[in-house]
Image 1 (cartoon, rainbow, N blue to C red):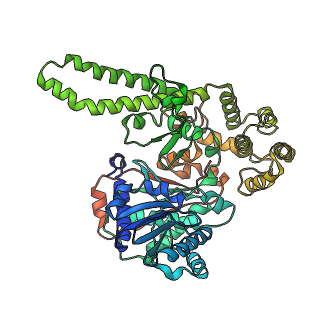
Image 2 (image 1 turned 90 degrees about the vertical axis):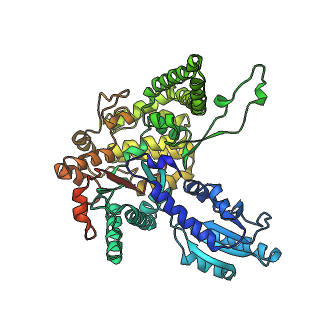
Image 3 (image 1 turned 120 degrees about the vertical axis):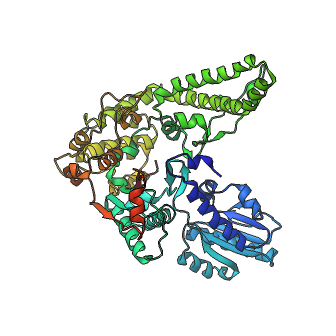
Length: 556
C-alpha cells in the first residue's frame, strides 16, 4: 500500500487499489506463466499503480520493451502486449507475433489496450493477418493516476496538441470517463464549474454519462463538494513562466517523469580519500520524488530561496538526534535509540540527497543567464515593454541559445500583450528561422494555431485589466513565510489559481467582466445526489475541497 497517497484530505489509495484490482483480474484471465511486452511510454504510468512484485505474484516472469523484430527468448505460456491504441504499434506487434508463431506454435497471445480498445487497431491487426492469434483483446482504463497525496494526473502529454492543433477531442472523452470513475469511488460531485470550450465538452459528456447510468449509482456520501474544470488556454501564461519552487525547479532543469528524476551523478558520489576521478559514477542518479519522503514533503512547495534555511534546520535536528546516543545510559535508553536508528539514518540519507540537489539547482539559479531570463519574464508579466522587440530575446537568438528558451519568451510576450504587432512578430520569425533553420516554419505556424503566438488583431490589450482585477502580480511576495500563492513565482500569482480562489470566495459573479475577457464560456452545473444521501450530507461535515482540473495541460 502506498501510504503517501492517504496523507492528503482525500484517500487516493482507494483509486489506486481499484486500478490494481482491474490489472490483477486481467492477468488472472491469462492462466499460466506470462511475459509482458510493454509499449515503453506506459511503463512510467503503470509504475505509479503497480510494482513488479505485484506482477510477479500473478506469474509474470519476464518483461520486454515493444520493438521491431523477434521478441527475446522466454519460456512462458502467455505473451501479453500492453499498448496504447496506435496504428504504428500494431505493425510492430504483428511482426512480433509472426516471428513467435514460427518458433512457438503453442503460445497464447493477448493484447491490452490502454486506456481504450480501438476498432481501427483491431482492423490493422486483421489486415496484417494476426488478429486471430489473440486469445484475449481487452482494454485497461487508466485515466486519472494517483501521483501523490494531493495530485491526480492523466499523464497525457499530447492532449494540448491534440485538442488545439489537431482538433482531436479523444483526451476530453478520457477526462470525462476518468471523472466518472472518480465519482463511482468517491461519490457524486454536487457542483461543477468550468471555463472554456473543452471544459464545457467534458461537463456535457459527464452529465450524459450520468443520465445513461441513472439508477445504478453507488450510495456513497460525496467526498468532493465542487469540481472546477479549466481549459489550458484560459491560462497560457503560467506554463510559460519559470517555476521557482524547489520541486518546480527540479522539473524545470532536469525534468520529473512519473515521479522520478535523473540527476548528474557527480554531487552524489561518496568520494573516498585517494579515490581517482575515473572511478566516479557516470550513470545518472535516479531518485523517486513524492510525499512518502518526509523531508521532500516539507520542502517541495517552498520557494527555492527558502529551501537552504529549511535544510540547515533539518541538519541541526538530525545531528542533535544522533548526539542523543551519548546520553543513553541505561539498557532501555540504548534500546530506544537503536530502535530509532533506521529512521534517523534514512533521514540523514534523504538530507544528503536533497542538499546535493539544492547545490545543483543553486549553481544554475545564481548564474547571470538565469537572472537575466527571469528579469525579462517578470517585466513581461508586469506589462513592461511588451509591444516592441525585446533586446534580451534578440541577443539570445544571436547567441543561439536553446530554441525552447526563445520560444517560451516570445510566446510569453505575445500572451501578455494580447498578440504581437505584425512587424515585431515578423522580425522574431525571421530571426528564428535564419538562426535555427527553416524547418521551424512549421513550429511557428503551430504555435500560432494554438494561440501561443499570434499577431495583434485589436488595439485593446485585456491582460493589464485581468492582472489588476485578479491581482496576478504582487510586489511584496513573501518567499520565506508565504501568505499568498504569488510566492511560487516570486511575484506572479497563477491565473488558474486566482480563478479557483475567487470561485471559493466570493464567487465568479464578482468577476463577470474578467471572465468575458478570457476565452470560452463559463458555466455552472448541479448534479442531483442519489436519493437518501441529501439528509446524510447535511448531517455530515462537508469537505470544502475544489477539485481543479486543468484540461489539456501543456507539456513543456
